[in-house]
Length: 407
Ligand SMILES: Cc1cc2nc3c(=O)[nH]c(=O)nc-3n(C[C@H](O)[C@H](O)[C@H](O)COP(=O)(O)OP(=O)(O)OC[C@H]3O[C@@H](n4cnc5c(N)ncnc54)[C@H](O)[C@@H]3O)c2cc1C
Image (tube, rainbow, N blue to C red):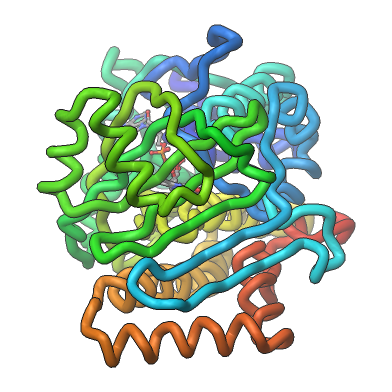
């Protein structure tokens, strides 16, 4: 007989594993299926190439499901300040946690730490079943939900399928949910660098004509860089030897962290603006990058996905509590209404910032610098931007709020 679950989550990255954790902890019978075995151990002196700046709202979610303390044990890099400046003008923005009620603006965390900590928790939750490595190949609609078929031919059924299978979502394709968007013709080039000066637990971002260069402060004193470059330049920089690369990086950084001393392996990720036209189908929902992929310049993709995960889980748990079907149109439509607008607003702001900084015509640059400096000198407006970047917006899922009890 085919095994049946209340929810099947496909994709065990940051977003899917979080959704599965929240649901399983609330005794919703959940299966998480992931294509690859998540990395559980790694040599001490290495840093994951993929890191994320996690907001306060994301930290709250991960804290409330008991995963954050494990992440802290592995090492998370708090940042207290953020400095953003324009390479072509004199515009500057400076955010400081001293202007907020919090001890830090956010944390830089290696993605493998977040994923391993979530999986560690899932393995200890009796309500969670983990199937991995396994790829979902097909979905078949059945009367009460979906039958999910894996690459080894095995089948599972669930009332609700949550697709958290990333930007190139196979499930979104199977359901013929269309996406809109475009390729940026830019790559995000990432690497871990050792700098002469300490990062001072500050996230540094310099806007250059091709795109922003960010130095994200890691717990071990190194920086993770995310450098947005045209596809041609990123290819050229990928081909350079380490010394050549360190030289161009030092020049692009304007020496803010002194000499660039050492660089580890480099990787580049083609950037896209992409959103699913709908997040839901019958007994089916898209979350995380499967629903929306955005420019990484303000580090919000995983944060937005964590809010999706917390929101859909909250609606399911609420429905179950009052004995309503967990995959009803009412639940799914509420989710879509709740999260789609917030995600689109975030994506549109990232896109606008990317476009604004690509212009290098002097009157525009002057105006842009004026605008940045005006925001920097206006405490109220700055506070608004700061809170927005920290993920502290209106209408968040309960888990994302500071100390707000879960219903
Ligand atoms: C250069 C760069 C820098 C970034 N920096 C930040 C940042 O600072 N802060 C931030 O918030 N975000 C950042 N992001 C965005 C962030 O990395 C993503 O938004 C986030 O990782 C998406 O997570 P996800 O779980 O939705 O998808 P993914 O991480 O793509 O996970 C999808 C999972 O699904 C599995 N899968 C796929 N297909 C199947 C299938 N058919 N069957 C079973 N399993 C399947 C995959 O194996 C994978 O484990 C950055 C992105 C880039 C490119």
